[in-house]
Length: 225
Image (cartoon, rainbow, N blue to C red; front, side):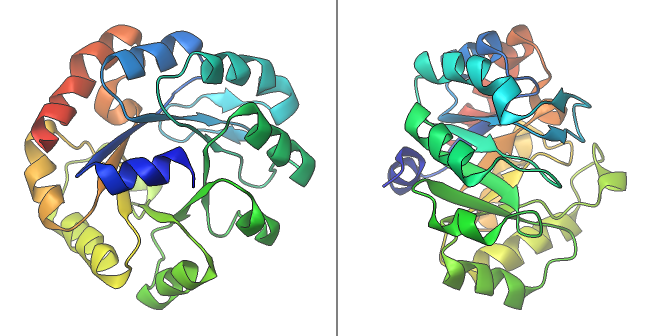
């Protein structure tokens, strides 16, 4: 069993940090601030941070350093239109990558067979039946990435809570919410009422420096207690 799945069984509310850069200093700052897990990226330009991440071959060395010094599970967002090969994903697993996180429409079917935790992201065009189908196919946890990009960084609305509640009610597997909206620590109690089991904190919520991580991450952890 992947370490993040074990954490989801133990923790009432999980906090994963999506790194804005594959930077060992940022990963260390996230764990030092109390994050339960971090996520690195390859083959993508990240919408929220604007960072371009290279191929697995290009990012492997720095990701290896992050894993070596990690105080918790390290996951990978492997890409979108381009993803690592099967052999590269097996190499990532052997290196210590604990889980993957990818949109359902970008995820090659063979990734379902990988020996790592599978967080599958549902986009803003999700339907309940499709999400339930993901669960049957072997998804371990769901990322509720249901905010259209034009609404990134805007205030959390009741409509967002409705969507998160619908997803949490539709599947038995844990649902995690990425901070596509400008979610504040004071809103964690509202999120917990929807039934979601954690947050994937990104630049919008916690900034992009070790200093902002040290300041912001503990606020979310304290609010989740």
